[in-house]
Every structure is written in structure tokens, then in C-alpha cells.
Length: 65
Image 1 (cartoon, rainbow, N blue to C red):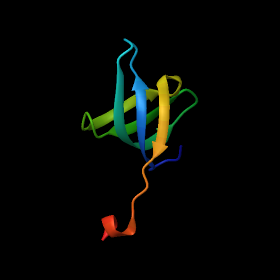
Image 2: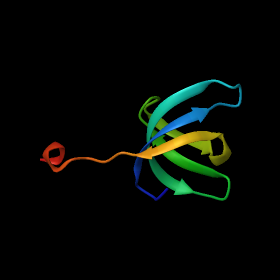
Image 3: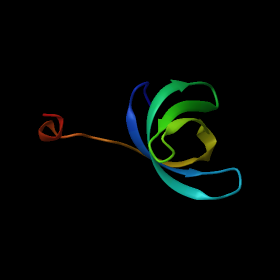
């Protein structure tokens, strides 16, 4: 994971709920990362050990123009 990277994650909350989210990583610490969550439209803090899967979002050039 890199700063300002856009990724899709499968995330398990502390209550055990699993969600799929698209986030933009803002800051990474030892055990958490802060990211803008497009599902909640807000900045959120995520525990790294609660991330079940992570896939980088790859944009095609035609999407950028």
C-alpha cells in the first residue's frame, strides 16, 4: 500500500461485518491506515489486520481523458 493509492478492500469491522470498500490511502502507521472511504464519503481509520483482501485500482488512459 502506498500513500495516495486508490484500492478496493474487503474489510471486517470489529463486530465481524464484512464490507467491500474503495478507499484512497492517506497515511499508514504500524497497525492502522487513514483513508478516504468512498462508501461512507468520509475519512476513516482502518486496522491493517482487519483487511481481508486488497486490490489496486488500475485506471485505463481512456478513463482519465
